[in-house]
Length: 410
Image (cartoon, rainbow, N blue to C red; front, side, top):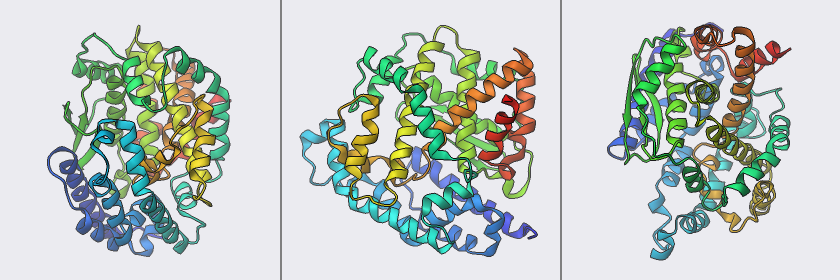
């Protein structure tokens, strides 16, 4: 089917309009996405979407019912009205109680997404997304299970050695990676880009903000990319910085036109992890070991989270038991398993978290291949990644990249 340039042009206009609203939502004032989601939904409601299957995630999420429920779940004030002040002072207890309140809405959203996916002939939303974004035939569950089996003993040792708990996981990782050394982030970025010979074509604005609700990278116009990194006193901030740089770098190096400029969400995330991983191995020295431990912890937990999500597709009624079954692999005795519904990867960003682990797996493959092929000639690394991956935009997918480095491993 011949692609319709007018379809692409109008979608790009809507895409950047939505990106700008998201940027404002995260940095200044809360935004209402109902109107733009409606425009996107009705624009994508055409057979032309068959040419851009990676847009099916956005199409389904922008439907009226899904968009409204996503907005509701995203606003925690809808669920914490009757939570005690004591619980609000305890971060984990707050999550547990909010989760119990939002559980029914999270399940409702899962079912709405499934219903929309069935319209396209798929069994559920997960099957559609995995096929649309390049995972079909890769054996995702097998890859994730193998990854956990290969790394879980080392992960448990790191957890025990550092006294990491399940309820304070992220705070403990921040403590694990605490640093009293001040880094010049802008210099680190400049040195990294120079080392790999990357000259970005689009303007990348990087803001460090201690008050930000999170870190993100957004392409808000054809030639403008906004990166916001939540400042902390942790080495994890550096991982986040290079992860978000990975997103921005990809956006900047795309040479394709039309909707190929809009990345598949999966490949976007996978390659951000690749850049994060490569930066750790090539930019840092004495901090490298601890940063590698943090990545291993994080991406093992992501693998467990993804398998839990896939496990509750058919029967979410026993989600709490399945949550305990999966997360106990980390060596924890899981209390309050009802907290599962609080995780945004169960609702707002469902069928997504596996991308982080796949990115980590691809990163290891890519690093070994590039090291073997080009040794420490990093400019050749940059040329290879640009030519084979970045320049193509969304005309390639996760499977293409996975198989690229599988092939070069042999």
